[in-house]
Image 1 (cartoon, rainbow, N blue to C red):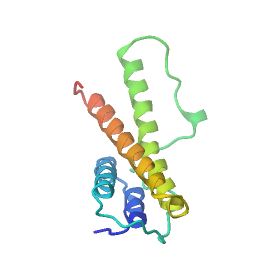
Image 2: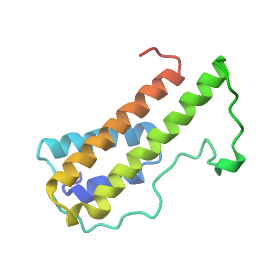
Image 3: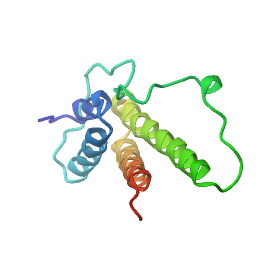
Image 4: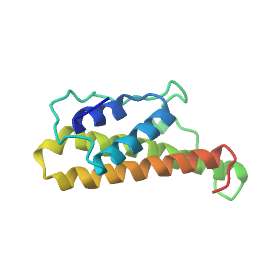
Length: 135
């Protein structure tokens, strides 16, 4: 179990599975809020965050064009794109804390961990929607 904030943030970044990343992000934010983590860092931050094997990540110029209109397929494509944005935003928030948290006041970590937890919740809601659930 991580006892330092830096270690906890790096654990989130290393998660490959989206559901594990969501749960880890929310747990770190909760543990920080409840005073279970020390404001310590000193851990190596990975160059790249963990990603699932699928879907394959493509550069923007290789992505299929989304069609205009309100078709079901267009809505699904838009929700899928938003889910990718939220997934990356989880890592951005936790990476910021892991890399720069020691250089700023505790309020910096407070705010970015809250943002990371919010992004994890947004990703989970969009994922549920893609799987056919209603929110």
